[in-house]
Image (cartoon, rainbow, N blue to C red):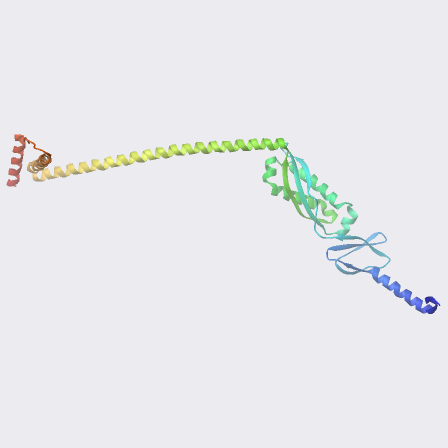
Length: 293
């Protein structure tokens, strides 16, 4: 006897129902990972989007044809050619990061997401570079990145995509332009060196002139002080003469003459000192006048 003969008709029905229920549970229960979303269709039309966790669908009627990762993605680095406003050919390397936030739009509105975003970025980069000169492209890279990010985000919004980052990694020039820029840079460096050297010479001349002026001022000041001292000495003598009369002046002259004679007498060997009679008379008169005082 086979198994079917051993089992009754009721048992077979029960087993069939159990198998059917197991299949229904298997088809109707969907556990969605945290990093994904499921797109559910019913008879070929969008039914719903399942988020992370435990979800239920109608078996045999609903199906899950698309399992979309919502993790952030990075497009391969791409090179775009562009011509600046001053007619310089540049090659711009870009990198774009994005993630899918509305899978139902991504699935039904765009076929190749990566290719579509790459094409959009290339067009926007060429358009933005075309309104900038080369120096502006080099110096205002942050502004260029901001504009590219804003425009890319606006363009891909209908596809249910969020652009998280758009970077301009490098701006390359052709060899001829690079050589011309190097020549310009070297010429600018030479000009700055010449200006610096000229400014140094000018400063040296200014410092030398300031030093000479300072020396002249100090010498003039010294002469003024000497003149003031001599004037003061003369004034003192004049006051003494006015106060003590001619005798004080003659006495001072006599002292000077005595001092001079003493200096002559200090010489080595024998000296013969001849005094004029006028000097002796001056000494005598001076001492007589002082005695009268």
